Every structure is written in structure tokens, then in C-alpha cells.
Length: 266
Image 1 (cartoon, rainbow, N blue to C red):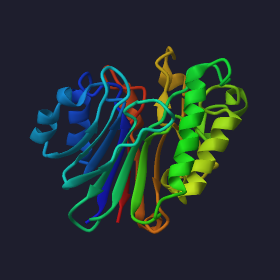
Image 2: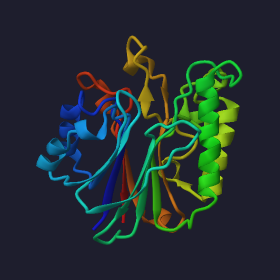
Image 3: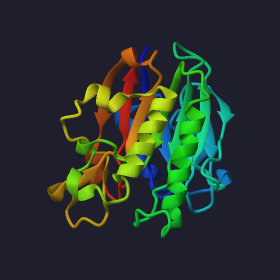
Image 4: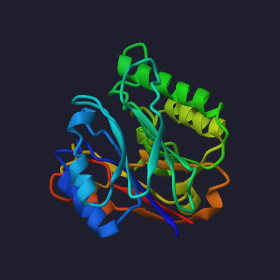
């Protein structure tokens, strides 16, 4: 049986639980990794997910900010929730699949800091934190076994020229600056990760997962960025059979500014 895995920055899971229900009804992922859940663990809507058939949850929450959650039909075991970048933020959760053909696979769910608006660590503490976080991801990646692992999430960096609407205009905009791209590339290389999305979609094609709330008409302007990612260890890369970026979700009622991204493995 294949594994259907989705990552989605939901931008408040309680506010947008009906959108999650809609997505699950239409696409039925086996595992759903959410970022920016924006609630403490005790307030996470576990009951809603249980009712939908997702009875296995690894939640790492924080009041009003950040937060990640991995929701699954398949039994999970929590493996770690790391603190990176020197700030005590809920930005990572690790979970191991315990049954089925992918038993033993570890899924890392990340929410990398956005970094504010000014791409200068001397002037912007949020940007300095982001760079420190990416550096810690590189150190972490270099110390792993590099087998049967998946890393997903809102990594808040669009690394390739066609991951943004205009490469030249975006070079001084946080999420596509050369220093961020360099550091994310280092993190990918240190962990030996394969970029699933670009394995299936050529680098020459535009590929976006995020459209700003600030755009008067996000669809007409299409000034998107690929901030959400799915990476796998090389042993898993040949098994990737499908990718689905649900752009239509950006047009739903009261949407997140990110859309769900699904990969099918096996």
C-alpha cells in the first residue's frame, strides 16, 4: 500500500479546522503534517481528528504562535521535539510510523522561522534567529543515519529561481535572499536529503505553495513562492510516485496563505 503524506501550514488549526475536514474528505492523506497550529497541546482539536479517523497524533504546541502537529491513520511513536536556533519555540516534532509497509520510517515536521522583513541579522533579530535555526538544521542533519526518514514542513525559504515569481526582484526579499538559500542548501546537503517536489517537477517550471494575503488578487498576480517542502532520504526517493500541490485551497473561504502539498510514496 502506498503512503499518502501531506504537509500544510494551516495558520491556526482551530480557526481552520473546517478547511482541514474538507481537505481530508477530498484527499484522504494517511499522514497530515501541520505547521503554525497556534495553540497549546491541551487546546489542540484532537477530537475532531479522531472523528475523522486520525487517532494517532504527535503534537508540539505553543500558545498563540508557531506549533507543529503530525496526525496519522497509522500508529505513531514520538521520537523527539527539538529546540533549534536558540529560542524555545515549538517548531519541530518527530514521529515514527509503527505499522504497515513503511513501519520504522521517521517523519520530521518542521516550521522554520519566517525571519521578519529586513534581511540583515544586525538590524533584525528575527532574521538572525532564522539563520541560526538553519545552521542548527545543518548540524542536526549531519549527525543522522540517513535512512527511512522524511522531512516536511514550512521551511520558509524558496531556494530555486523558479520557486519565486521573479528571481531578480526577490533577491533582497526575506525567503529568497542568497544567504538563506545558501543555508537551506547546506542543510539539505548535510542531511543527504532529496527534494521530492523538484524530483517530480523540473527546475525549469514555476512551483509555488504560498501566496501573500497582501495581494489584492492573489490568483491574478500569481506572485507565489515555494516555501513548503518534502524531503526524503535517498533510499526512499525512488518510491515517490506522485505530487499534488492543491493550489485551489488558497481560494477557499478564510484560507491559509499556504496550500497543502501531498506526496505519494510506494
